[in-house]
Length: 311
Image (tube, rainbow, N blue to C red):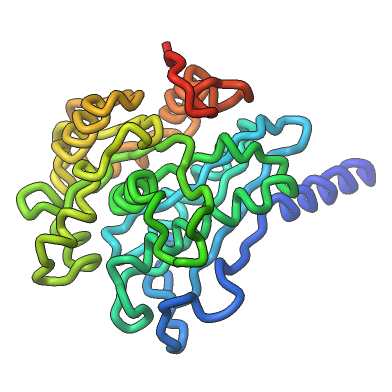
């Protein structure tokens, strides 16, 4: 009995050590507005408005670590952060597979807490990937195998990170590598065009009457280049919240720029369909894709900017 108790205590200690939450910034975020933190959460651990963005690490056991890492960006229409189902649950799975996972609790766009609400979330995402690479040695991570995964509006933020990596929000990050090495986008908002976007995400990010410059800038299908990271996409044809044309349009943009991409479109399931499935079931598709693309192993020519074939 004593041996079992000791084992359980060691196991709990290991889990506690593997999960750490820390703020993205040491003080007020650059461009932030000082205000009392108003964070609230509901029974499902969904987070609402907060002025303190954080990153939570979920690290694999050293003897199981692949060296790969993923920044996870939950969705919520830029109005809420679906932290548990589109963040924590996913991170725990990745860590079991030997992939270091980091859940981003980004600032939701609001004039109350930031000077430019359209760029605030992107600033946090860029800061997060910068931190992951800066502390890569500490976390046993290969800096050439750091990707991003986003859900719904979090998919918009993830794809913004993947298409705007050469345009840092903060001047201090100029010259740093902010490019994800891969993207996994799950029922993502891609476009800010009125007839294609998710209306709520557009309103919260860009306001009621956005100008054409911002609409184009944050329509990420229009920002794809040949340097956009390899991408895996998931969606359903009957999604009544975020039209599947977001995924189709992004896939076409990737294809036209010769960016390696894979797309899984299911006939039904509606928005959030993967949340109704066991995590270990549908995420096997991601693990196989990461294996094929070389992200689970060093030495892949794509990671050095080469032109190696994925299949």
